Amino acid sequence: MDLIANHISHRFGALDVLDDVSFTVGAGEVVAIVGPSGCGKSTLLSILGGLLRPSAGVAELRGAPPPGSLNPLTFVFQDFALLPWATVEENVEFPLLHSGLGTAERLGVVDDALKRTGLSDFRATYPKQLSGGMRQRVGIARALAVRPAILLMDEPLSALDSQTRELLMEDFVRLLADGAMSAVYVTHNLEEAVRLADRIVVLSRRPGRVREVVTIPMTRGERGDVNARGQLLALQNQLWSLIRTEAIDAEREVQHA
Ligand SMILES: Nc1ncnc2c1ncn2[C@@H]1O[C@H](COP(=O)(O)OP(=O)(O)OP(=O)(O)O)[C@@H](O)[C@H]1O
Image (tube, rainbow, N blue to C red; front, side, top):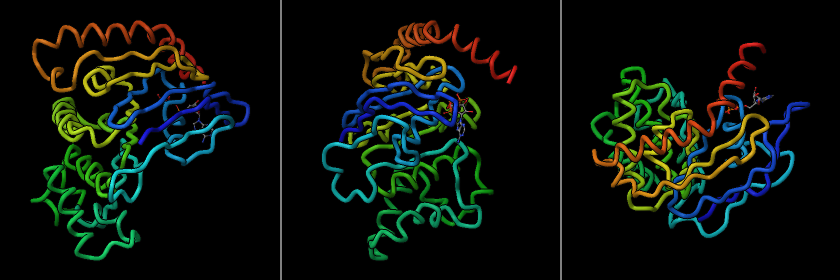
């Protein structure tokens, strides 16, 4: 299933946020969106996920969802967005409650999502008893439970310390390895972008326009190798040189706002 951003523009009142943004996320592909603060990355993700109607253009899905998919698109948020009064298992089951699945099938799906995220031993635990990294794993398990074609991720690792971030990046690489799911990955972190994405859409300062699309010429597996570090760093520098000047301007603008 492909996700297509087709000439998307958006304004909030008098504020022009996105200007004629187009790209395609093919089946099994991971596309990162980077750009200066406030350039419209989260707004674009909301439009792609159908939470927000763009002022112009359209976000389209093409092709059939994977078998058994309950929802072709699902979000993973920076703040995890878990239900604090519910256990890990109940949090993961939550999006399935009105899915029409029978209890046995529902619990099977939950088991599978918990297994894939290494949470099987924590099913009866409450979010407040878990570390940030484990909470985000619950957020990911809940997203997987609807068997999505495409994960929409908004800074999913930014609330975590660097070691936990590294471990979760490895989790993402594993989860995405079979090419069954695609992802759109919004991040400020260029290291995450070059480690995880197949292509990186670089947006300009607000109103965000597609400035460049950078393709990463290595498989995700190859990027885990120590010998790939130099090449990844060079790609990160290439991205930073594309957004540096505008990031400084955007920062000044935020400080004076
Ligand atoms: N609901 C809204 N109403 C009005 N303005 C909004 C709304 N949501 C976002 N904005 C404004 O739109 C602009 C783009 O916001 P958005 O959060 O999409 O940018 P971003 O690139 O994700 O930002 P950051 O990098 O800081 O996370 C900002 O100036 C923001 O203040």
